[in-house]
Image (cartoon, rainbow, N blue to C red; front, side, top):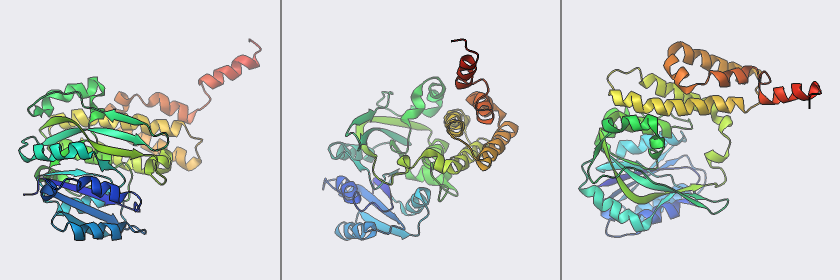
Length: 334
């Protein structure tokens, strides 16, 4: 029986993918429990060749899906179709797992009953060689009802512990709600992935072990390309999340939890426009989105408290600190 399916979206990471795969295949005792799915998303380098080499070496545990470029979401969609493990998670091809903890993690998954398993994440910063651990705060030997913790999501930074890098979900549960899957050729679909897990997971358990090693700062990585460059993708994901809250078939706790996700994204979204010198087109984009949000999702507009940011966007000098300072010095009141 395959205990864990690991979907590895891969695009031009020939320099990193071997480290990723070696970390998964390091321990011979757990290889037979792994369903490693390398999804080559139209790479133009040697990524596909490397993937096929590993498929040949570990044909019972490694398979390759080769497809045209469609983005991270498209690769996850393709991987989930062929996933056969009891649980499934996503591992980017430039990241890797902690080899000392991965065996324990897989062994525990064999007998696990929880819908969702949350593990710790370590972020490795390339540019200054620093590390930062993200550890979950809940302590329990048994699954915890997500219904019971929904208030913590709003009251604390509890929500930040849930990410695509920390979550392992029952494959069958996820497939039940997958539908059209993640948006293709779109950045920030990790927010969609998290939301879909909350659609189907009724409980979770935390393993207090570092599993995911998250590599930050490599050339070409999306985080380094500038958020504003992909602001339209961010809006697409936001609109998708907002639409899901209209679905009365989803559990009430879903709306409670995802409302926090939406609020955080809204503040980031408006804040990005506030930090830029906007062209007429960009100003029109945020005005249209602002009207859409107020007219259709006024609750989230108010909860996110974005109206004051919108005022700054439309009147960048009016009542801003810098404008007041200019008036102060012009009057000679120094």
